[in-house]
Amino acid sequence: MITFRKLGLLGRFGNQLFQYAGARMYADINGFKSAFPGWVGNKIFENIISYNNREYLLSRFLPTRQLNDFLSYTRTDKIKYMLRLQKQLPQTIALNKLYAHPEDNINFLGYFQNELSLKILKERKNYVLGWFVFKKDIADEFKKVTQNYKPWTGIHIRRGDFVKRGLSLPVFLYKDFLKSVDKKNIYISCDDPETISEFKDYSLIRPANPLPEIPNFIFDFWMLKESEMVLGCGSTFSWWAAYLGNRNNYFSPPLTHLWPKGYKPTLGKMDI
Image 1: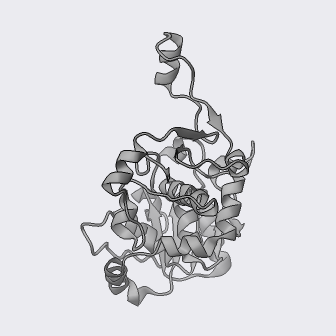
Image 2: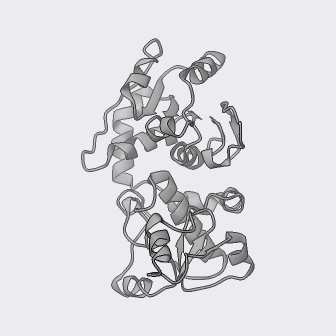
């Protein structure tokens, strides 16, 4: 059995989609069973189920294969190692080595955002689209409050941690792009209200999430997914929205961890 015990606890929603899809794809390609803990995907997608009792118990005993896209050790690990409370630092492995020599009955830890993972997701997209189908009752409610706005263009602008890390795109890039395509009905998903206010001269739409039991970020995600065009920021959140929207109309920098040194981000066409 293949699992990812920390699913839902390691990174935000976009990262979690990569982790679920990466681990499940590895299992499917190699003919292994997969099972996962409960996470937000269980709540919103039709075809996602969590462990049964037996699978949960088994998952606790599976050895971890830590991918090399994840830090090899935490600060706590390092301190324990220095104090000789821990014999060795966690070892990592490249995903391509696991594909070359498949192992069953393991727990993954990592992000599944390397070139091999992206290549597999692109080649086997039809499988993944079948996994992440919104539950009908949720999709129906979302459609009711947005039907009068179609079509719209979705923009994802991430501030917060992106600003601190020097990864945040300037607003003028989005404005210049919108001028070049003359799009109406703009939906902006952003964690900073002041940034949204900079688009006051555009035809913004702001439908409210009709389902209080569903997190607002899920409604944001659905709005981006249903956009006729998605302008991203190098985030996994908008990458997945565009991928699941399946319109091949995504303009963004690459995922931020793939930016080369000195890269100046632009809104280029991304084939996903």
